[in-house]
Amino acid sequence: MLLTVTGVGLGALYFLIASGLSLIYGLMGVLNFAHGAFITVGAYAMWFTESKLGGVPIWPRFLLGALVGLVVGAVFAGLVELVLIRPLYRRHIEQVLVTVGLGLSTTALVIAIWGNDARPVPAPAWFGETTTLAGANIPNDRFLLIVSALVVLLALTAFLKRTRYGLIIRAGVENRAMVTALGIDVRRAFTLVFAIGGVAAALAGVLSNVYFTTVDPGRGTSLLIFAFIVVVIGGLGSLRGTAAAAVVVGLVQQYANYYASSGLGDLSVVLLLGLVLLVRPRGLSGSFA
Amino acid sequence: MSGLLSVRDLHVHLGESHVLQGIEFDVPEGGVTALLGRNGVGKTTTLRALMGLVDRRGSIKLGGEEITATPTHRIVRRGVGYVPEDRDVFAGLTVDENLRLAERDGDPRYELVYDLFPELKERGRQLAGTLSGGQQQMVAIARALLNENRVLLVDEPTKGLAPLLVTQVADVLARVSELTTVLLVEQNLGVVQRVAREAVVLDTGRVVHIGPAKELLANEAMVHRMLGVGHAA
Image 1 (cartoon, chains in turn orange, cyan):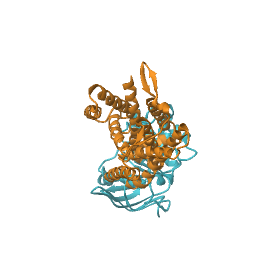
Image 2 (cartoon, chains in turn orange, cyan):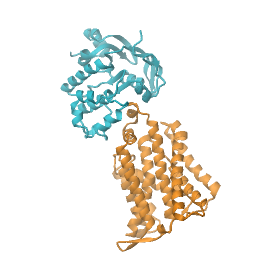
Image 3 (cartoon, one colour):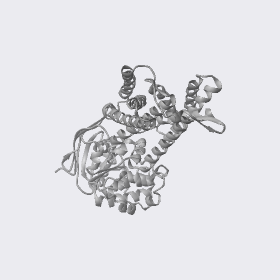
Image 4 (cartoon, chains in turn orange, purple):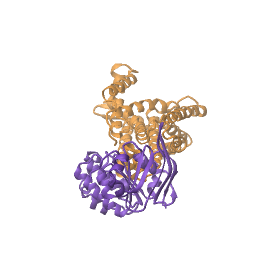
């Protein structure tokens, strides 16, 4: 039970990152290698805020830190789209170079300012405690991960189904040119999607601080690799496929680490990716939302 | 005299191919102007260039205002509606959602749309991707009619449709032409003869004929030479 909940919790973390990647690729055709930077920026913004609020009780300190992390993540991602990606639409090689460069330079900048060592992130003690479920003692932070991902999934689904911008995004994923031919400035949707992706990635950064109890400069990069695998397995541009693939990847990783050998989890995920690409090259789902 | 839509020295390159080689024509206000020519002479590219969907060079004026450097969404907002060749309905969206997406101003003309295509009202919740070709064409035309446009660019609306549906589409075009100016790309010369007032003929990226549509279509030798077909009225 613990293994399964931990696997689903890890999958929840991957989903938060992969949902933004999937939306961005689906609408804009941009493979955003800078997405890891959004995670890192969110995680460090939270840690930095908390470190400046030393005398404040832990719950408000934690919640304020998390809120700042999300806001900084959204603003950073929106600016990346406006300043770096917008001038490079239809220039895919340059987009890859810019986003890879931004990802690397963000990590380097963080190391230059705060060093390479992991920093402890204070969180309410409740997250470290356990709840007994079906005879297993489950750390409470796993529930936080799962509930957060479910809320994001429901919120994103409602946004895509019920709002005009959601409609524009779903249509843009199918045929961007036709959306503009209906008189819609699709570039606004691009910025919005980047900001949404930034919030979700920053939330992953914030929650990873709780899960790992520390923050380190390599956090974004290490999580991004698995998020890319999730997006490919789930089907590029598919939110439901991404959610399903995230859970599968999290579970496979945990089960392989436990039942085979520690460290085989990562390898098994890559093997799963290869298997899915052989059997279903377009991923688990081809539809959006 | 220049028309509502005025095209001068319009060039389009697609890859290595010089598709439009300095075409010039006017679309007069009111009625249907047909853009004709054999397959591959640049008719669809001309409409896409007018919409700003391909890179182009030259001059395009709408009501005397230059729109050559204007992005697509602003061209549409200046009153240019577009019905693309392959319908391009959003398959994963319902009929209602396809129409809602096309709403530009506060007063979308649903009454007109449902009057022309009552079937769309009944199929509002159906995914557009599951509609027949004819029904998808209705959605594509309805999207353009939902807003008041100064000119409609309609690309082969009868392509691939059954004869009965071709007649229905021709009926709709005839009615639409009473409301707004239409630039129509159409291979079915029977439809052209029925609805078009003026005709512009393209050949290998150049304009080779401009004149009244009925005069052109009455001259079988010209039709055969320029369009490569004999036509059925």
